[in-house]
Amino acid sequence: MSLSAYRELRPAYGFDEVAIVPGSVTVNPELTNVRFALGEFTFEMPILAAALDSVSDPRFAVEMGQRGGLAVMNLEGLQCRYEDPSTVIAEIVQADQSESAAVIQKLYAAPIREELIGRRIRVIKEGGVACAVSCTPANTKKLAPIAVDAGADVFVVQSTVTTARHISRSLRGLIFEELCANIRVPVVVGNTVTFGAAKELMETGISGLLVGVGPGAICTSREVLGIGVPQVTATMDCAAARDQYYSESGHYVPIITDGGMRSGGDICKALAAGADAVMLGSAFARTEEAPARGYSWGMSTGHAELPRGTRITVGVDTTLDRLLFGPTSNTDGTENLMGAIRTCMGVCGAQTIAELHEAEMIVAPSIKTEGKVYQLSR
Image 1 (cartoon, rainbow, N blue to C red):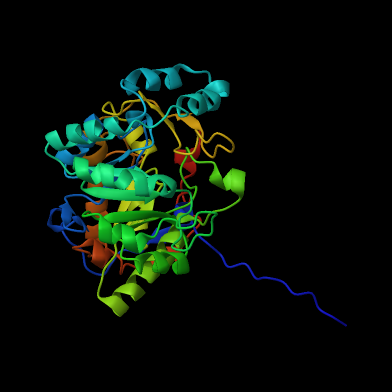
Image 2 (image 1 turned 90 degrees about the vertical axis):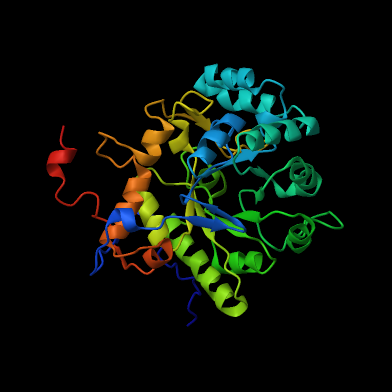
């Protein structure tokens, strides 16, 4: 009698299914160190703004940098396709929801104008802050030298899934070892969710790694392609790769959990799971400083054949200062994100984010509902 072979599925966990266990020592929140190092740069907060046209235009990048953070501008977005991107953003915002994807596809079909790359980067640099830019692997060899020559400080290579080994029709595709050697700035690569892919990418000499496939509200990759790993498990697996690579090479490659975080609690769980920083998109779209007036859409929404993103409405209900530093009257953790991080570190006895990596985490699917009957009732 023969038995059928089967593959065993391992459990994977998202933010709502886990909790951080408080430590046996506590620390005053103001004594915690929340700085984030990337290459030769050190930022005052472990929060980056995603390369979304609804968020990271040059003005927003300056505002974010002046507060000690980093915003990433998309070189393949509207900023580098149109002389006046604000009118194009307005057209996207004003479109009916049922037609928004088609409108975005049409507007993103305009060619990238190389002269606009330097112009946008100069605006950010004139604001006195670090400039980070992003593009897909297909355009990296062409656009990276232009951006770096214009003054970009950090270059991000980003796609739905990025690996160190890639099979294509190109005789010579993008080779990260060569990219890191040829440009003079830190290279951040994403996105990935597995131990093996993360470690192979780190071995190419990159300076940072983005973790996450499809967790954000504006991304539909999980629905369209059926791929992804919940963010807590993905972060832990990639953090394990970082730690092993560091023990073997002495080179520490920070990992940045990208997407799927709504509140301070989600961010704290990502950091406790092993992230050195987080990247947020829709949260920043809620601010008065964001260019899209409370709307946001995914980087892949404009794909001509298989869009993997959608336009969402988050509204404008906060400012950049209130979102990051408070004070706030909101009780749901969606404002004063830095205060949440510092307080979480304090109750876990962690004075640095590296120490927060040592906090115990538990599987706790009832963590947000236990005893909440009066809060949840209407």
